[in-house]
Amino acid sequence: MEKATIKKIGIITSGGDSPGMNACIRAVVRTCLATDIQVVGFYRGYDGLIDDQHVELTTDKVSNIIHRGGTILKTARSPRFMTKEGIYMAINTIKKHQLDGFVVIGGDGSFKGALALSELCPIQLVGCPGTIDNDLVGTDFTIGYDTAINTVVDAVDKIRDTAESHDRLFVVEVMGRDAGLIALRSAIGSGAEAMLLPERKDDFESLISKIKSWRNSKSSRIVIVAEGDESGGAIKVADAIKKECPSLDVRVSILGHIQRGGNPTCMERVNASLMGYHAVKALISGKSKVMIGIINKQPAFTPFKDAVKHINELYPEMLEILDVLGN
Image (cartoon, rainbow, N blue to C red; front, top):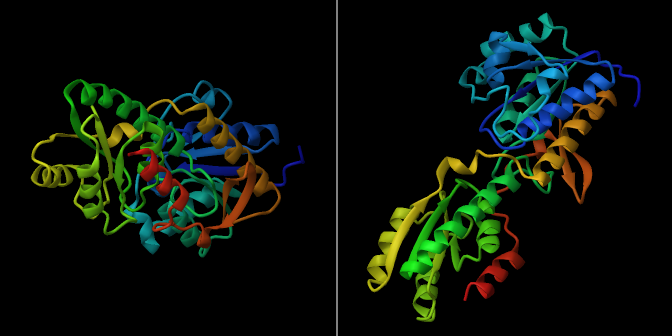
C-alpha cells in the first residue's frame, strides 16, 4: 500500500441503519491501520460529531462485527446539523481531534450534510452509500439492499405456505417510500404475481384487471406493495381488492422494520468491504466530496452533488418479466 499522507480520519454512520454498515466500518478501520492512519468513530451520526461522542477505533473494536446487522456506531438523523450553529460545533470537534479526512456512511441526506460541512471546513470527505432502498445514483447496489430483498423473499416464502394452504391472496407491504426497487426485485425473486410501486402512478386498475384474469386453479396469490405507493399502502389495497373481488380471501402482511435488520448477506459484506477499502484509498489519493460506489464490479466515484436519489427510474425489462411470469 502507498504511504499514508493522511494521519487521522473520522467516521460516522448516518440516517437509517442498514445491514452491512458494520462490514464497511471494519474495512475502513483495518485499511487505515494498515497505512498508519488513526480512526475516530463518532456515535449517532452528525449528532455525535456535534457533541464529540467518540471512540478510538482499533482492530479489537471491529473484530467480530462483519456478520452483524445495524451499526456499532449507532445512527441518527440530526436536525441540529441542518443549522449553521450545529455545523460549527461539528467543525470544532474536527479541529479538536485534528482530523485530516472523514468517511460518512449513509444516504442522500447524509451526503447533503457532508456537502454543507465541506463548504465551511476544508477537511477531505468521502461517503459510502448505506441505505436499503438502493436509490442512489453512482452504484449498482447500496449497502443494505441485498440483505433487505433477501429478507423480503424469505418472508414471502413463508407467507406463501399459508396462502397456498388456505387459497388466500396476500398483500405484502415492503419498504420503499420514494422508490420501489425493494418491491421490484423481491417480487420477482419471491415469485409474486403482481406489485404496486410508487413509480407507476396509474397501476391499480390494471392490478384489479390482472387479479380478475387469474386462473381459478391458483392456490396462492401474492401482491407486493411498496409503502410509498399512491394507492395508500397494503391495508387500503387489500380493502379495495375485497370490494372489487369479494370472492377472494384477502389478507395483509406489513413487513416493516424487519427489512432493516438481520445478518448481512455474503454479497453485502463483500460490497461493503470494497466500499470501505476504496473510501480510505480515495482519501489517501486526495479525493474529496465523492461517494464510493461499485458499478460493474469496479469502484466508482460520484460527486456528492450528483449522488442523489433516483426515483421514477425502473428497469422496463424487469417490469415485463414480472408481468409475464406472474400470470
